[in-house]
Image 1 (spheres, rainbow, N blue to C red):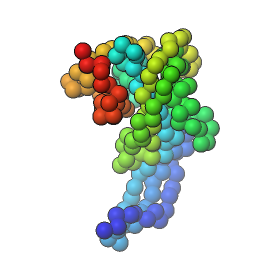
Image 2 (image 1 turned 45 degrees about the vertical axis):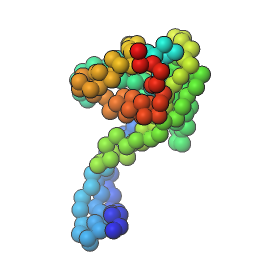
Image 3 (image 1 turned 30 degrees about the vertical axis):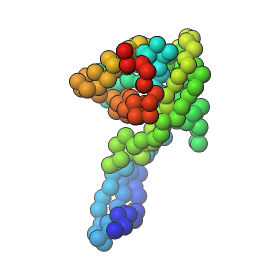
Image 4 (image 1 turned 180 degrees about the vertical axis):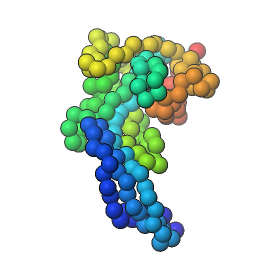
Length: 185
C-alpha cells in the first residue's frame, strides 16, 4: 500500500529565526482530506563526547520551554547558513560548549525527534580522543560541563532522571555500535 499523503495547500502561520509553522491540507491515501500542522526546523547536531577514561561530557543548562535545568549532550542548530555541513557544526558546538576538540568525530546517523509535526533532522556524532581546552559559549548560552561515568549516564536514563531525547539516542547508538565497549568497569 502507498501511504503517501499529497499536499494540497500550505498556509504559513509563523516565520521565525529557527523555525516556521504552517497548516497544510493534505490528501490521504483513501481520498479524504485532512489538516496537518507542520513546524519546519533547521535541523541540528548532538555530540556524545567520551574521554579516554570512559567519562561522558554532558552539559547542564536551562531549557526555557520546560522551565528547568537539564543534563544533555552538547548540541546545536544548523543555523550558520543554508546547507551547513553537520560535521562542521558538530566540531563547532563541541568546542563552544565543552572546550574540547576531538581526534575522531564519528557519525552515528540521523534521527527524527518528533516526526508527527516537526521536520527537524538531528545528526548524531561520537567524539573520541578528546583534547581539552576552554569553552566558548554563545553570548546567550550558559552551560556547565559535567563529567560522568558511562554507567551513571545509563542509570540516569533508565531511571527517567535524564529525559533529553538526543542524549538517549546518542547513548543507545553508541552502545549498539560498540563505542562504549571497554569502558564498563
